[in-house]
Picture 1 (cartoon, rainbow, N blue to C red):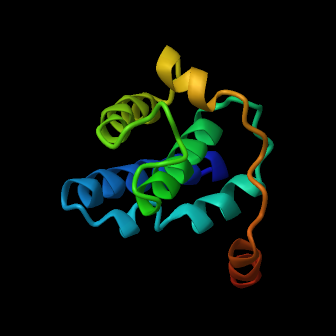
Picture 2 (picture 1 turned 30 degrees about the vertical axis):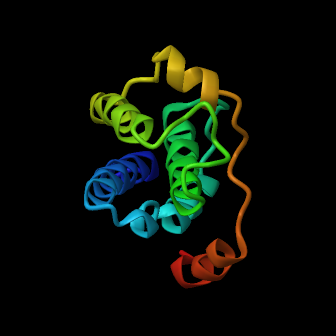
Length: 128
């Protein structure tokens, strides 16, 4: 499986788990896979605004918003995240770029994720 396909699979799993966590109101579990996804994305040459980068930024924003009681990501509200997650999941499953204007207006201008200290440490154990 290519690195891209592995990342796409992980993004799908991460967003599906986030949907379940949101439904169960286990908000601190949203985005548990972010560090692993970040490591995978940093090893790839992805274009700005690509499917995987938008999925990563969306999941990162959802996680951040959830742990901050749904602040800091206005105009996004608590119920917007699962609704838009389903849109991203459809695009991830179909492996097509995101065209939803609501998602693009919030998450299009994205650079490659900055490597967090946790991701740097984890990458030491994932070195090939």
